[in-house]
Image 1 (cartoon, helix red, strand yellow):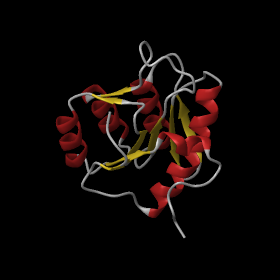
Image 2 (spheres, helix red, strand yellow; image 1 turned 30 degrees about the horizontal axis):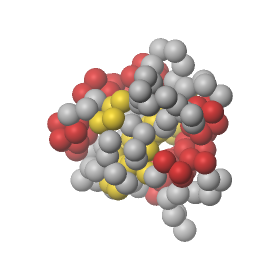
Image 3 (cartoon, one colour; image 1 turned 60 degrees about the vertical axis):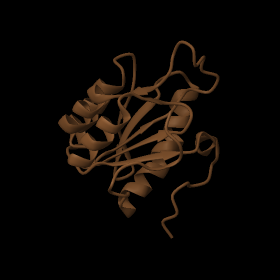
Length: 149
């Protein structure tokens, strides 16, 4: 479970920060309603919300709808039993990101397992995808996490 910070070589652009702030608020609501733990946004528009199909298919669906440069936000549902339903990012997710042509992925610290961490980060860097880990508490805040002022 990665700690807070930018794991990729590339940081978020201003536009990606705006989408990430927006997406974190949406993901907090959808996950609280047990709808899904992942949202895909672009230009402050929700392209996809994870449903029963899972994260990777939601990412691909978001890319199919919005084209390149979307932002993926993956959070853990409040009250989640971390023994049974742990959010995971791995190389399969990287393949979905590549197919969708997303430009950034945001996850929560302490609430998402990163499988094959070094390989995932290298693959995302090769795709020029920004990969940022935010504090778990940020989604329960109504404030923006990324400062775009």
